[in-house]
Image 1 (spheres, helix red, strand yellow):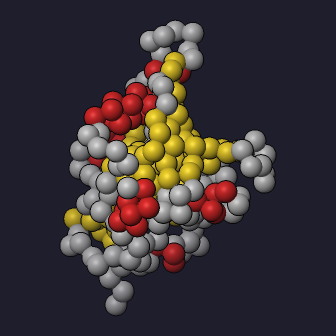
Image 2 (spheres, rainbow, N blue to C red):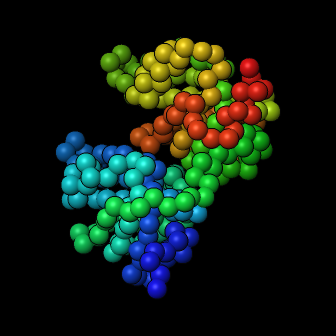
Length: 244
């Protein structure tokens, strides 16, 4: 008897799915000032990821009951095509919670590769699709000046913070944080007490003028984008050996 299914198996053509997953990311997507959805990025033991949505009728209930890095067993949910213009995962489908969706805590499973960092050359050579967010890792080698282009100086949406990261091959990527995350990162970057801190950027967008264009940058995509300093991954030592 199958206790749970792998995420790659999910399809709208079949019902009765049960999955065991870790919550990699959870965030609010506001529909208006009084209502929000909860968006989650889930991963199974093999490292396959999928996006899930909890609608506004249930989002407030689940907001304090689901946290990142928790393992959950989930059953009785809908599987639908992921038609978002920008996807948080490469999975062609997404999960929708229903009023009778069942969520219980689960024992952590031995996992496959959860940190799937995109190599810099994949981005440079335009191999990465523009419709899926990427994770990248590199040493923070330059931080620009925080600016606000909004006509109202108090509008956080106008903030921009340019910075640059370097990988183990000494290739660099230009990055730009926008809005509130720009303000937050500027404070965090200033607080770093040493040079060449390695950071991971999770769920950021590759922006270029047109396909194949050599001009591009990695840009935050609110509200999901985040940054992890000194992540516990193998790549960090290789990067530090080159940059130090």
